[in-house]
Length: 172
Image 1: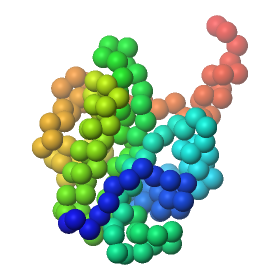
Image 2: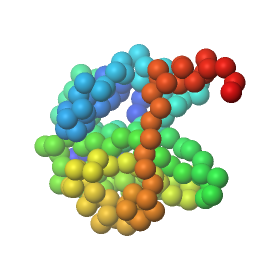
Image 3: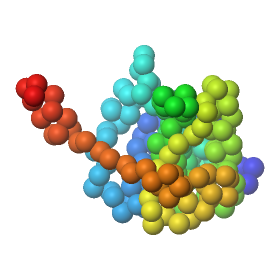
């Protein structure tokens, strides 16, 4: 499918980004977990010090609200691992169901790989839901290693309430 274009997300894409984030959450059966607003995405990704970067895939010829229809996205940021250095962390990656199988996801991953190499990252990290077999196979076909199996890493989260409690706790 040569009918799509990849480009860096712009502030005008925020409504489409939120739409796709919600579609991804629905796909993962986690719709109720999306708390972000368009305002959050705009401030956090397009301010003076953006917390994330984003690539969008748009279909040429099919119009959305702000121009060509945005049909996929990849949200990422850079982080640092004290053992291996700079990393590109792929936070979210989604292509609308009806546009899968046309190479759009592969091209997004290729562009992210190019970005990682250009910025001298040692690797790209990401998380995939355990039951998302199609995505796991997609990444494995491209050389991804499953660290949860190979190295035994586990993902943890400290939510906002716990962060607040810890920040207020007296020194022990």
